[in-house]
Image 1: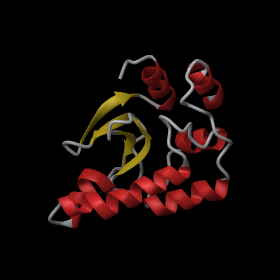
Image 2: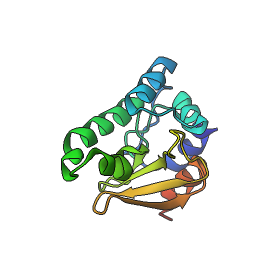
Image 3: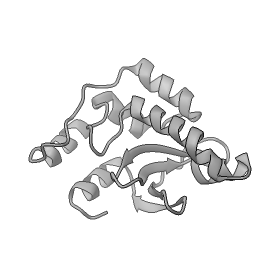
Length: 146
């Protein structure tokens, strides 16, 4: 489903390339590294394509982003709680290429809010809803609606 949807949108784009499916062990490793279980739709997408080298992050890129955030952005906050609330309580899985990320927001109990996809803005560390799910996000992104 995801592979076909993405392929439809990137057929005329030289910069986006569907990748091979992500091995299950790599998805599990990324979940551990991020610290939260991934929503089923994110795991399903990664099982079909491990990113697209443009918009959608691979499992490895998801982990690299978390590492970068923890090493660099954590210094922007005086306490760990604020860092957790503004940055570390998100599962970033796609980017707009300008420093902002598309993500799930993680609820206080440690589960992802699967009712919406958010954009997290790097200038303000704030997020707001942009799509109802990953297929909606992909469609809106490639139709220049977000």
